[in-house]
Image (cartoon, rainbow, N blue to C red):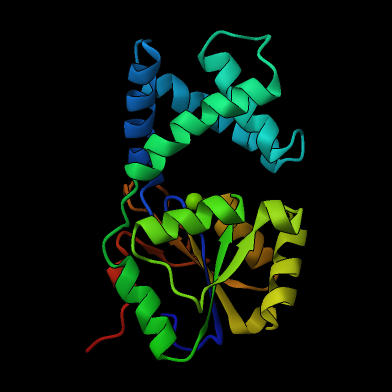
Length: 224
Ligand SMILES: [Mg+2]
């Protein structure tokens, strides 16, 4: 599936690492530390709401973190500094709970063995995303970090992919993107002339004839 491309781009959260379960475990532990009743469903809803606002350029990456903390803790007047300090407590627990999806290490290794360029195309910040890759044992010095915060463009903005390919130095036709979020990781790259594979770990998505959908990363492994 990946063989005929010079460059393979992978989304990170929900694609190579299990963001949802780590966020759930992280917010439960963090809430307990703060002495409040954990509400992972509410935290998830706040993340979806505020991260989407960040992706659409309505506030900064730090701003969406602070907004989530203020709402979750019912503290609308918290300063950004105080909210971000509290968010660090969540991050610590979140990172500690992070696990890779099955097949992630093998797929990355196969790409390197085939001499492909491998990028992490993520809407997160480079430092946190690198920490998550290291924690889960997926980090490799050959990975090219393409993080939205540092590139100052977030998926699905077409500029994200233009800048990413400039950094990697390959043409759209030589590139394939693998990711779990349809608008960001599949429809946006296809519009930019990049092939795409939808990763649907939960098996809840719809299939679209324009692109392949996989349930498990091991489906990307070449036949032995
Ligand atoms: Mg994702």
